[in-house]
Figure (cartoon, helix red, strand yellow):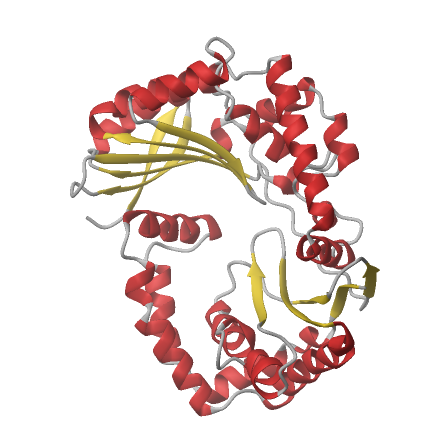
Length: 412
C-alpha cells in the first residue's frame, strides 16, 4: 500500500498522520515527530535538546531506567528518543501483538519522564565524557570550527551536543521547560507503518497523545551563512591535515530547482569516484584518500560543505586544489557525459532508496515537512531525467556564491 497523508484530531488540533500499511511482517513502527524542537532551539543553553532526548531514554520516574528497560525487553518493544537539528523524535517499534502495550509504555513515558537526580547525573557525566573524547577527534574539531565560522553569532555556531560549560549548567528545570514548550500537539506529526489498520492507529494515537498540551507552533528560523570568507587553522598533535570547507548556497528547502543542485553537487563532490573533487585530489594528484562535498538544505539553513585529509606537507596544495576545482566548476559547468552518467546513477539507484517501508515513510515525511505535495520526489526524478545540459550549466553559473569558500583546518 502506498504511503498516505491523513490527520488525527486531538484536543481540537489536527495532527498530521503519515501512514503506510505493510502486512508482510507482523511489525509496527511509530514515530511522533515534534517540529522546530531540535538543537536549533538551543538559543539559551547549548545542548538542551539532545540532553532532553537522553532523559526520555532513562525510562519513567515510577519504574526507573533499568526496570523500564527490562519491561520493554520482555515484550520485544523498543522505545527511544532523539533530537536532530530541527526535530525531536519519539520512536516506538514492536510486534503487532504488542502494539497496544508499546503505546501504553509510550504514554507513561510522556506523562512521567525520569527526572530523578540519578538520571540527570548519569546523562551529564556521559555527555561530558563524550565531549572530552571529542577533543582528540580532529574531524569533529574541524567540522565544529567550520560551523562556528560560517554561522558566527547564531545557534548553529555551537555544537548541537553543547559545550562542557553549557552541559554542566543544565538543570532539571531546563529540561522540564524544554519538554513543556516543545513536546506539544501543535508541533506533532505522527508517522506510522506496519501491520496495522489506519483506524486502529488513529484510535490509539488519539488516546496516547491526548495528555499533551496544545502548545504553540512556531516557524523554523532560517540562518544565513556569514558573507565574509574566513580561514581558521587550529594546531594539534596530528599526523594529518584535516581540511574542512564550506560555502553559502542561495536556495531554500522548498526551492523547485533543488533537483538541479542535487545533480550539480553529485558531479562536483558527492558522487565519489568520478566526481570532480575526487578526480583532481585523489586520482590525478594523490593528495588524499577521498574528497567530498555536499549541499545541506533544510528549513534552518542552506550551504555546501566538504572535507578531506591530506599529508601535512600537502595541506596548501590540497586547499588550493579545492578552490581551483570549484572555480572551474562554476566558470565552465559540466560536460554532457558527466550529466548523463549522473542521471543513470540517480535514476538507476532509485529502487534502492524506496525498497523498505521506513525509507518510503521517511521520504513522504520529508516531502510533507518541506511543504511539497505528495509524490514530489517522484516528480523530481522525472525532472532529473529530462534535465538539459544548457539548463544545468546555467544553474551552476548562477550560483557564484559557492566561490566564497571558508576553511577550517586542523594541522600539526
